[in-house]
Image (cartoon, rainbow, N blue to C red; front, top):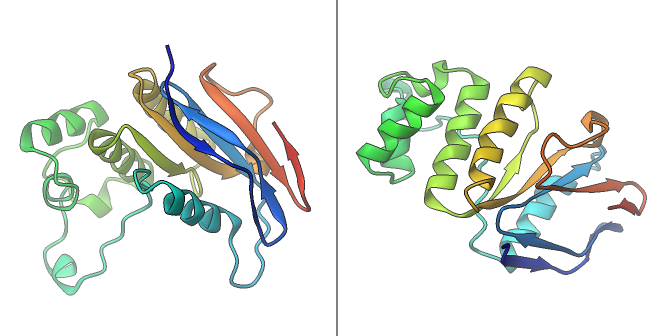
Length: 191
């Protein structure tokens, strides 16, 4: 049985419509957006901001980069990221690292883009039953790994909204629990 977690009413950003949808437990909404950027406007980021404004319980599993001076002097490890940044207990941090086959003492910046993205997604799913994901910058091989990780969480009854580029959309979604929304510019929406 699926429960409705969140109902999004159709909204418009800069003349581009994002349709009505229901986020249900055990399902993933995958929104495909064309790679059109207008000066100071990114449809994905603006859509994420909108969704978070109407539902504060939808954290974005966005890429994390080490910016502080102390992080450059003392590079972040997988363990520090999970325990200090994400506030996950040590036992769960160890389990997540094992599941992703990365070491707790590995340097966060050195585990590779896909492993960092996977770690961020797993950490957010550990803290929340519903998250927002973006697949931007992920290779064709990397996307398969991330899709498996996300699907394993969705099968546990969790849910998410994933954003991806329209030009990378495959003919069929890899899992049955994914609802596809395709947005084209200007103003054509396919569900």
